[in-house]
Length: 272
Image 1 (cartoon, rainbow, N blue to C red):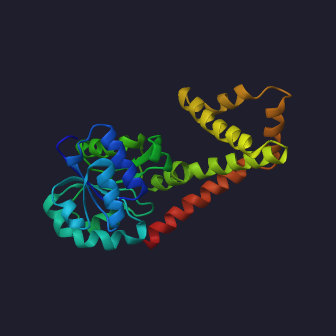
Image 2: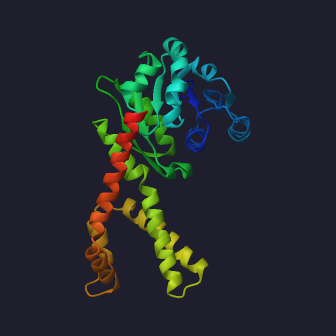
Image 3: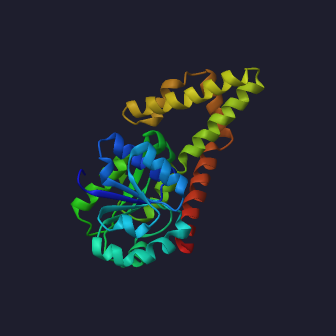
């Protein structure tokens, strides 16, 4: 993407992660511009990555090939609507990372002058280990799709989905998913302390297990059932723990939690 301006509106956690990833992958600082209302955020981005920054959203749109919208869903309309003339002139790819806000609404606010792709990254993007679900409406060119994927690949893996409704599922699984794993690790830590381990040792064991299990799953063929079986000896400690989880309807608890997250994502789409 060298020579193509990638502009951001919003330089918060995810915007900063993407800027960092792009710079690490060789995108020149001169090819990145960030608009943010907060002076401290702009100063930090300039100091850390050498990118251009502005308090004026329209200023970064003017020559953009890609415009990444990294603001909260509730303010997207207020941010995008005034930019319609600038977007009509520049016609960049508009890449939205906001949960719940559908392509049709984004296109309407932008003046329908630019292609729109939705992306749902997750928190591990902050350390370059994220995964992003991507959706492009029918008729989106391969060039636009490759451009969107190249931006999001700066912070980890990418997966395309065929239906916009499936972005809500991506949000519930990988977007919200790190919180589920952190909750499980925190409960393991607390249980270890309850059984007498020192808190520092308990935390280290829980965190390292979380990290190692993820690496092991990613290094294999992705068969999670087989990985679980490989850890579970008949009559052993793991089997006893899994039997307790099954009796407590762990599968129902997890599926219910995902259902709640999907439902909330669709509710956000209605109010955005």
